[in-house]
Length: 403
Image (cartoon, rainbow, N blue to C red; front, side, top):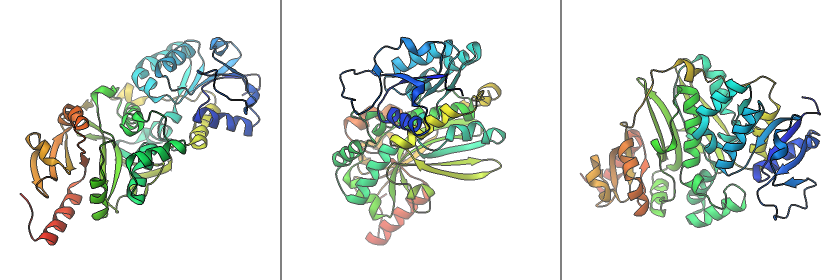
């Protein structure tokens, strides 16, 4: 790319500063005439950069690439839309704006010749969009699951290893730049869900809106839950999963008990970890930083520097129309207050007079979500192997088990 080509940069928060750092390291900062910001009153004197709240210069002919790194999804949508209508290359990290408008953006790419790349919106430093879009285009993926959010993983790690409170762990995450001042997107599971739905579009060609999918965050995880996991040699992770079972697509984001045998067990702090299961390649595991200025800034810079003409293919959207999204899959869950869910559960098994296991469908969990949050009831997913291990330990310790 010629030095004459300019970059229209919006946003100078954590990711924006990380991206600009890479421009400086490679002598490309002069390509940014001025940076569009929301708050002109914020002190940024330490940065030798011109700031503006005016977006009018972004779409001038000499601006080749729009790099959108703002938190406001409505403004991000308008910027991306106008940029694509002008045939620009767009690099964005705004997963919410993209997941709600992806179909519209794809149509605009085809109509006006622009390009939209958003690796920085999905799983931090792991180039997972390119992996599934390019590398796996010749194989059939049966499941993608993993830790998609570095902030929630950092918090859960602190709860388990240091025994501190949830509020203390959240404050630490904010101080380290992993969590926003309003962290609800991270800890509520929204962030993981947006990323998961974008991958689902690439892998299965399903454009599913967030309000149609299951996501339960970590806000209700209690000290009792942490002690329970520690007692049984387990960890709690916020796991995202999309899988294909006989052409039915199941999607979920849930706190999950993870055993030492799982590769995800050792993924701690702000790190992300992703497992992909496919027909011919078996299972592969990817691990990398999921939060922080330079890791995400690098991913955005990589999208900016990618070869001219590269674009996502969206083969699944065009070629696979036989997949059906379903909410009828069952989740085995544990709760330390399972008795409050008894009337909704099937195959319930008690560990005590309050705690135990049972099954809930995706549809039922979506229905119960407001009730769970209102009453601060934690539900934690697990597999049958872990459940049997826990029940056997209870029988060994007490000599009996609740029925």
